[in-house]
Length: 216
Image 1 (cartoon, rainbow, N blue to C red):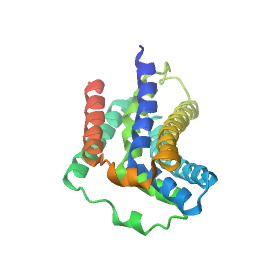
Image 2: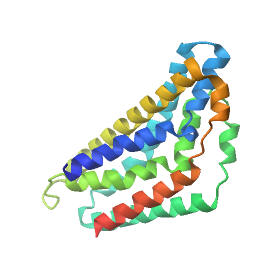
Image 3: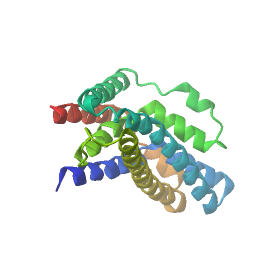
Image 4: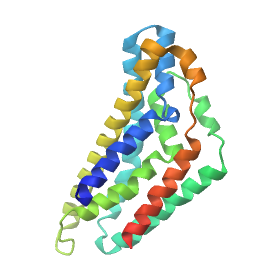
């Protein structure tokens, strides 16, 4: 498998990983559907979560797409991004408490909750080293390409990364939510709740470390 293909698979698999994590909101979709007793409400809730997550991914990736115009600084940008992801992972390992402001967002604003949750957990930052790696696989003569051409190309990749990741997250989380809503019920959710906080933090450190190693 080529490096580019492996990185695109990493984008999709990280979406699946985010999707199955309860911290990204699929239990809220189940709760909304059960309260209003309708499968349509489940789909609306999942759509709202997807919109919020997609906006969060774009908000993190697009500034880096602008930075990548500075072709001579690509190495330093990727090193800095990798260190930032590792630092966030280490912080989350030390600080296990969930951000309190998420509890103050009303259930009717799932898109806003999803955006804030993705930002607080560093979901977008996890994608940055992968995105930068994909940009490095694109054959471009950065020395002769115009800045606007480079920016448009990197922004297109950023959009594709955000969309693919969000689709994978929504599909995996949606399947779990549909299963709990349609067959397993809230008792299963309360008895089988799994916490991925430590795994999440370690995965940030791992992704940042692998990206740092790849740069060198």
